Amino acid sequence: MQDSKLIETFKMLKEEEMNGVRCLLNTDLLIKGVPRKECLLLFDYIYSFYPYLNHEKLDKKITLQHVFDDQSGKINRLEKIMSNLLSITEYYIVYFIENKAFESVRNNLALARFYRQKGFANRGEIFMKRLSEYFSEYEGMSADHFFWAGKYLEEQNDVKTFKSGNWKESANALEQNYSIFGVTKQLEMLCKVVYSRAAFDQDTLLEFEKIKATIGKDESLQNNVLIRLYYLALEMFYHVDDNPNPYYNEYELILENNLAYINVESAKILFIFQRGYFTQKYNRNPNPENTRENSEIYRKHLEQGHLLVNDILLPSTVVNLIMFAVKEKNSAWISDFLLRWENFIGNISEREEILNYCWLNYYFLIRNFDKAEAAISFNYSNIFYLLFTRRTRLKILFEKKEYVSLSYEADSLKVHVFRLYKRGDISEDIYIYHNNFIDFVKKICNLIHNVNDSRKAKFREKLLEKKCVDKEWLTEKIEELK
Image (cartoon, rainbow, N blue to C red):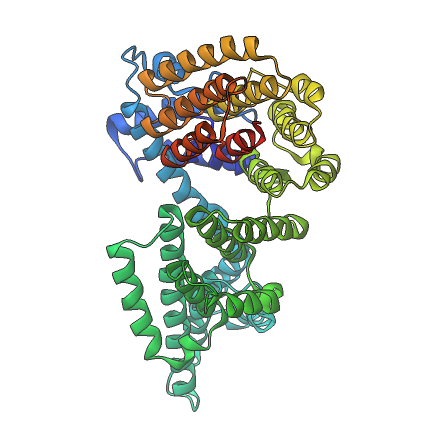
């Protein structure tokens, strides 16, 4: 559960915001009856560990047994409750966190409306003047900016009626603001959906085509910077296989030139989408060029501070950074990164384990196998970090030529992976990938004292055919056989 979207979202919330989610759960606004009670039970259990949300007891099966007294071991029920709770949390973020940037606008607008309706026009104009100054500065370009600018224009024209000389201009400005707001919100939501699915499907593509048709009919929508950015983001994601991509250069240029004007939340979505685009390029074709591009954009965003969430680097972000540095064999960067950013990595409770993971990668990369072994931790609550560590342990034993120990540990890992698969903790694909890795490591050990060109060729051919983790390392070890 520690790597679920729900826990990752909770990690981003401050304590007052967590309490806000709890207050929302106390109402029947979004969910009622048994589902609401289940969400409350799950929230209170998770909150009891806050802010240390990588606690080993935040395991799906432990949570299912402890909170819901369910001994079945089937986690589908818990995942449905987690999904409901995530939806409620995201509702809270949208309506109570993201719009906080416009809290003063909302308050001034409400006060202006109140005093005007009560006949105190002069008092109302004080607040209208504040609003006018705010929007003239154009602080924080976002969909919500255009929404509140439209509300301001509506209120302004309640007194300056459309009978005045500039009524057409005011009406056009109002209509334009709401058009921009509507289309921007649609594009923003579509970006989130496409990113979460890592691709377009038939429904999202149909929705995108409708929005494109709307933009094509309205020059004010075509000239809006935020709409253009979201539009280009979706186009470059749709054309991810094109090389060079016809939309990326314009996207990057507009984003860099207008960053000072874009609202923080909107910028965050655009930066996440930018990284997602390069990740998709890499996943589809993991060649050296795509590895370099992906790592460069991550490092650029790291230096600009866009990877920090509440002043910390999430473990998943750190792992991505390290993974690409390892693929580039850039040990100097890993060392510099850890020395500079170690106090920002994860929460205090999880920092030591993540640092162990990072230093293990570093020492293995520079072939200091004794120090790599010393950095090994088997206490990870995260299954995938643990599997990586145990694979690396086999690789260290191979590099140190400790083949007897390797054989015993390989058999142990094979049993462990099988049990994880049978319990439903890992997918069939992950089981196959790891099972094949273990088999190949043992086969290489058997080839060491009985090798020839024909055996090496057959081994290479089998390795290419099979699904397997750490293929690059296995290939290197085959080529080293003499």
